[in-house]
Image (tube, rainbow, N blue to C red; front, side, top):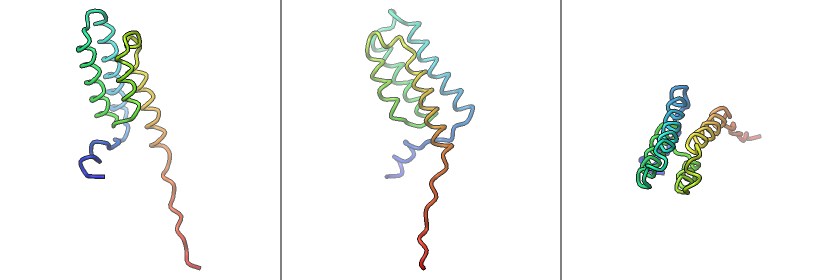
Length: 112
């Protein structure tokens, strides 16, 4: 993979600060969309979703779960659910599991 793509898709080490920042971004995005409710025009909601996906991806690293969340936010009734918060919790749980699992040791073949 080219160097530039590797830096875009890198997975940073989870820290308490990163987790707190990711949750605050997600709750902020969901809260802002809920507050705007009927006053928020479609392009404002979509702009909030784009910014939320980009910022959460910067903090936690890109994860494929962020894409369906972005699409779900386009559905009128489902946009009122706290989808960014739920998705952020799921991505953090998956990242923790990935970082706790030790890499499988390579089995060396010995010549007998």
